[in-house]
Length: 348
Image 1 (cartoon, rainbow, N blue to C red):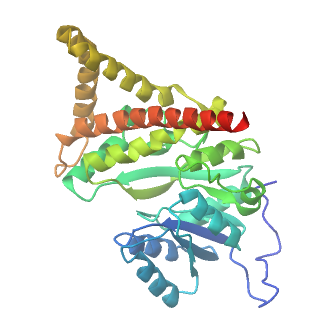
Image 2: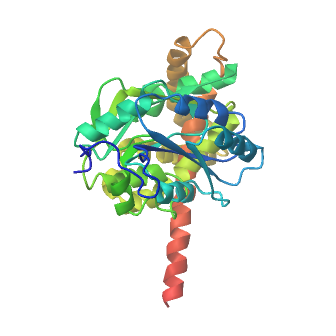
């Protein structure tokens, strides 16, 4: 069983006779000099587990590599790996190949984890039937605009059925962010698909679910630094959306209404834009329901934010997230069509 724990204590490294790490913490990093220190502090300060920390430098140019080398020199638990080609799935696979632990726990380079996070994740994997465990991804903003973006990302009014953004009840889910997994099973599955540049974690989880269930445990909460501008949020979600069509084709049963709503919205907005040139009144009628929905949801979310939040930014962040994801989805669909056309011509 994936959750079975060895009963005779930690395994020994046959070459040194020392105990092998129980947990391999994997941190892909690219240009994270501003946040990687806090991330590593939160990981290395964990108690109750024997760990190694595998940080994969993904071609950083901002001094991240220098920070990592210094941390590795200070703490032998830190191992710095290199994957110079910008690719998160390739970086994850680089780390997976080097793992010496029984459990793999992924942590994002611009996030921090609270005390006890690793011990709880490992205990849930070891004592339950789960093939993967994850918790809440709580967005945190460092500026007034960033706090507005974070408020949107943490609201069920904005993210729909994505439980890991706001859930408070333990439950079985179809995806967990920054999951914890049995290393042996992850290797058996071949790791992360490097042909999936975005949504690689969701795709990986769908293959995992063929072997068991994924557990969402809200007690596992990771503080994740949100984008600090509406433009950055738009770019991020456009990238997310672009990665969805190839994953949907591979795992059609994983598609939910929430995945189709943003591309439908973009199609509706495009239709309204075309109509506006000849019949502006009709276009306004088409746009009014969405505008009213955004205004209403934005007002509700804004009221729940701290006083030092740029509250007028909230509606813009809502639109950026939804339109960015929807536009990216259509671009991803076009990518899939082009690739299929290329393969069809190559077979002729």
